[in-house]
Image 1 (cartoon, helix red, strand yellow):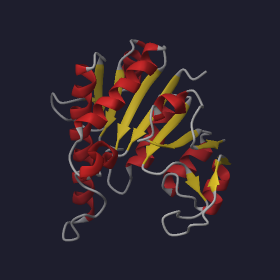
Image 2 (cartoon, helix red, strand yellow):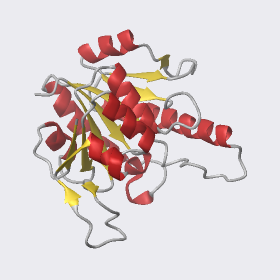
Image 3 (cartoon, rainbow, N blue to C red):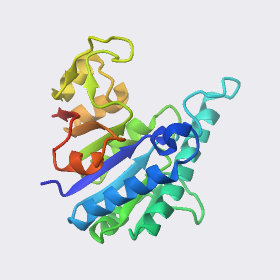
Amino acid sequence: MLNRILLKLSGEALSGEKKTGFDLDVCKDIAGQVKSIIDKGIQVAIVIGGGNFWRGRTGTEIERTKADSIGMLATVMNCVYVSEVFRATGIKTSIYNSFECGDIAELFVKDKVLDDLKKGKAVFLSGGTGHPYFSTDTATVLRAIEIEADRILLAKAIDGVYDSDPAKNTDAKKYDSVSIKEVVQKGLQVVDMTASVLAMENKMPMSVFKLNEKDSIINAVTDKFNGTKVNV
């Protein structure tokens, strides 16, 4: 039985069919599932990407470190919005950021995060690593290790890990389970390589699944899902 999880949501997932901004119904569904998980006594921390506002080098005329700073700020906006949706659903929340952010979020401190998790709060971890050149994938694995999560749940637009891109190869094979070592050796598209190596070195397992399937997050927690388990 899992005691503490880190849920990674892509920014694009929050926007639904619009592909930008927020889809309130999607966010409400996520909130309902997370509330069900917390009510069962499982601690939930959440990292959200910024792709619904800014993805990678969206502006090629902008210097890389500034472009990455915009991406980190996008994750803060996402966490503030989704946190408020959670609160409207009856979930107590807190937001911890990787850099000073005024009254919007507290600075990440492990002990404070753990205290809030133990109080049954959904804890949002925003701002990536706080440094350029690192993705929210890397921030996800880093925070999961820091808070001693039992498993990372990766909610994606795709239903698991494949040996090649299923959008380009109709014969792509989906893994029911795969080792993190094999992910690194074969360069499989789970998280980026920096995050994959970090997960391998620190033995952090992951579950990869499609967000928009019914009760996908709940099913991933209970292992009744159609995705891929990335084992250590």
